[in-house]
Length: 233
Image 1 (tube, rainbow, N blue to C red):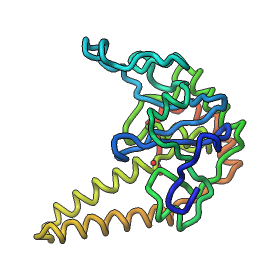
Image 2 (image 1 turned 90 degrees about the vertical axis):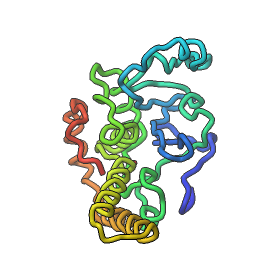
Image 3 (image 1 turned 180 degrees about the horizontal axis):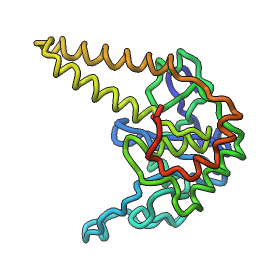
Image 4 (image 1 turned 120 degrees about the vertical axis):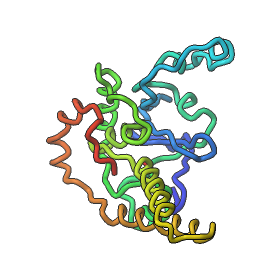
């Protein structure tokens, strides 16, 4: 992985990797845990999509390789890598990232936090897949696929991608409500400056929690429904 990109080849994958791919013209990324043997456990929307005639006739059919049916299965699911990627490029989330990487790379691609051993990561993913509550109700910002993958890898619940979206909304609100900017250029510069300042502040404030603290709290996290996450994507 380079300074600006985390893209990897499928041949580079290792069991327990936190992987992701971009969807819809890079507007957001979808995250999961690679389990080995061409399988990925990831967190999807928990509300079942409405079944319509058009979706039934023209919607995606169950995967011939892994049997995953996107029209019926939701929440924490296990699929093949092909179903996870949906023909998009493969990236690996970077842990123990330095200051430069966290500043230059897009939110939701790296963290200063260190990852646990692969066995522990895959065990958490399997526990969530097999548990009744799984990972709680899916929320686009506060309890999403990145939260799930980050939790499996570290025992912490965070989403850098979600926080970046919150920061962008806050910057837009403050800029438009201030009434100090009267041209499109002034507004654009203010928005960019506000977003960069918030990102730098989050990077500086990010701290790695002690491994002992994470280990002692694992059981508490397993029963968490996702409603009280601090969120670091």
